[in-house]
Image (cartoon, rainbow, N blue to C red):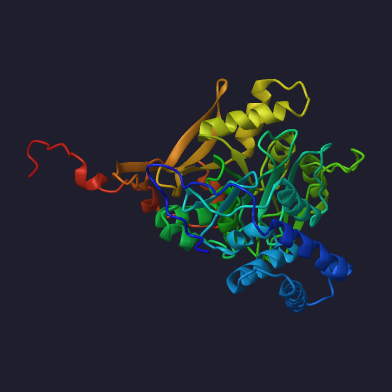
Length: 453
């Protein structure tokens, strides 16, 4: 079946409802094959290709004794049943489609995908709620998580690193819901980000030098704006000689350096015990002699420990935060520090933030679905009760075309950052023309003095 569904501008593509005529056959053969193969399906020693061949052979043998099924239907059933047993059921094809960046399952009969930042409805469907629940259970069990009525929400990841969020009744009123943020097989580098217009050549040159100068950088943006992708790309500028500790809820970062230690948080078990929070991992990382600490995302009280790490000699640390603007990102950090439970004055928190952070990189998802860096902002010192910010680069929108394509580019504001001493301290050059506003000299009006030709 064709996966690239056509986007309808007048109405969404109609979903296919109603029972699958082969649901009973598929369920019966599925259970029979699992019953015969048993533990072989979950052994780590068996070759995956040989296991798939064995499963497909067994399915074909059982379908041969079923009457009234055409050859095309038999081949389709072989594929669907094997995907159920070895993969992730009907969405296996969507997971294999590199053009799909997100999969949204809104119940068994309503599946949407995101391609190039836009939503499309598909004709993919599950048999019923129980079929979808089986696939969810398989996904979360692979990483030691669980989902049931007592714990009806879960965050997990697939073996390829894709992030999975699932919600089931009673919290969901429309049946089991799954959202999968797909993990790109090809990691985007900074040159690729220039090609897709996320960054400009000048901003890439500047940010690479900022990483080498060990600035503390906060990446902010909305959901799905590309924060983790940018963090991965920026990490390429980190030297192989540095010891890096990464801390995440669900492991997504792909650092290629020689000396990387990866830590992942752990949720509560079935008895409500054994949780290891991101905050615990950040504090523990300080005892691991890191040169840099990279936290995938700060969401709560760990923001305080992250600021403490940045202020105690771990220069070059990076993290991300959900926010709508650079100023909002600082407000969110303040709020999360207060969540740590300490009665700290707001001024003291802001002084910590201003001292810890050097740079904020803000991303947005545009109207046309593209993800772009819209501001590179320096965090300066406190003035009275306010942290001063200074934009070094800003995205200028030139026009929005009728098809919603956004035309624009990153432009320097002409302001030089005040953290240049950190570049000098590490012997990193920073060209003066990097901050020059294009056309500034040509458009400048010079006064004419009397007697001077």
